[in-house]
Image (cartoon, rainbow, N blue to C red; front, side, top):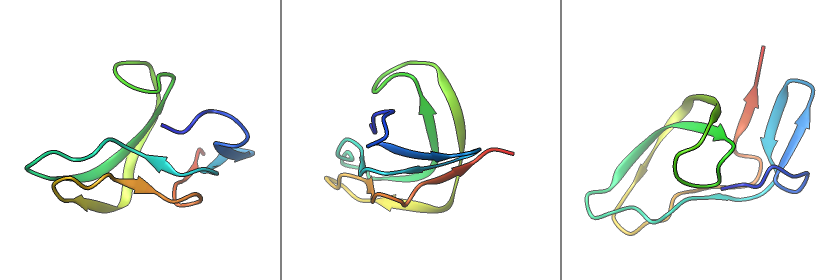
Length: 79
């Protein structure tokens, strides 16, 4: 999870970009493909989702790999 702070996100008008590394738990034995992202109020588990959408390109994640997005890799905009 990336904290909702100036150090976690850069917000300009109706656009936001992650200012910090977004890192997720290690993938299980079967692997996975990440296709969507969501922004919500909880840092883990069930919580209120404020925004969700598809990634421009999916991310294939193999067994024991910890998926992450570098700072600046997630650009979100609202119209």
